[in-house]
Image: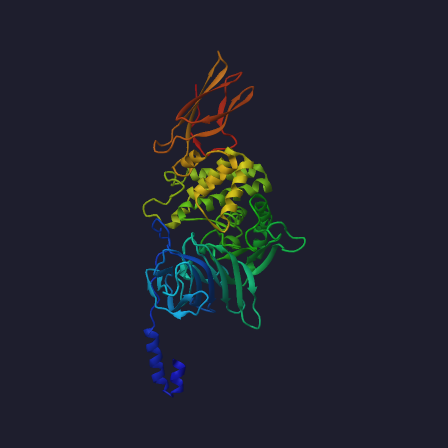
Length: 567
């Protein structure tokens, strides 16, 4: 419009006044809605299933304002709904066009309120068809896309979406149950490199710093990210002859490190075994599910964030050289569990975080020896036992007053979830346990799952009913706490060991099996026992009086114990 004013020859003072009026008349950016709200029970967005996001975004050379267009393909699921509700918080929609995916899009009315944009579904798009909407928007992201200066003072931009913060930089059905494919076209300031999920399909050329990426398999919105900075690149595992092979179905995956130039030496050290971790997990679970894996220094608020094919890590952790290899392993596991197989809703987050916790530790059993793994396992168990969530079950562990989605990042989802997997492994044996995990993974690859899906897969692999196990460990709170008392009966040469479960009455009476070891001057005597009662007495033949009684020295079971009583 201002260009038209110039052609009419209107003088500069009036032009400036008109421009000011136009600026003032622009609708303001809407107030952001809080992140982390726990959604109500039931389907998150009934009637709609996003198939694909195409995101075109221009990053600013200065300031924080972005300009973007999101083109979204959405399957209409019967029964047909009249209004599409997309999550978009704090950014201003400037136009919407809608129509059938393969037809012409028409200008559409829309409404923004409470962190959402509401779009009427055109009458021309029936249930069973695919709706396409193109949404132009702009503004300063309040969260989700962090644009600013890094630890060294250089400007960067990084997405950081977990749990539902993708909505702060692109319109979406921002829930783990609705996975979709995605492509990006990122217009970056000069001198910046761009990283994102998926395959690079366009690199800068001809002076335009434009980068395009695509992901051809469905992924959750909380893992859809871009990052832009001046990066130093490190090839950890080349996708070429002589590199790591047999990791993907097509035989190869490239593993790289992207750090700020000042921190490249720290990155090389921290990520030195990242390629070997991919090999280890590919051998145990399945081929790597994505086309590449980049380990990226970034502005994430977390120690690590498992974005598909582009894991983001704390910039401070890498700059200070304190990021742990355990974190690298943890985030790598997520590529299989959490990303490729995603919890269907937040209550089942342990299917992501418990898996990453346990198998993140398990890598070090092969890499550094069994003792290292036992140390990590024992420390993780202790962190759970000392936590403030032992009175809550793993599933629906965020029912505490005032809870939000961030409250699921707790010792139930991580530590106890990891211990549950370790106990399942001990209960079933390695063969059935890993067979069950592979069945579970294959059945839900690039989809979503719930706890019952894992149980059924393990039951099919083992031929055993496991409802009792999941009931006491996943759907009920707490853990067994044992009081151990023992006496020696010389006449029968027996150690009489009494195990009493003294945990809270509202916690279950646990059914567990482990070794009881009686130490004597003549050596140890070991007996495998199954405990099913609150108080249980075991008689163990010994030749001399016991000096001590130990429970479960291999750490098969998550438990605590009171001091040993002597008789």
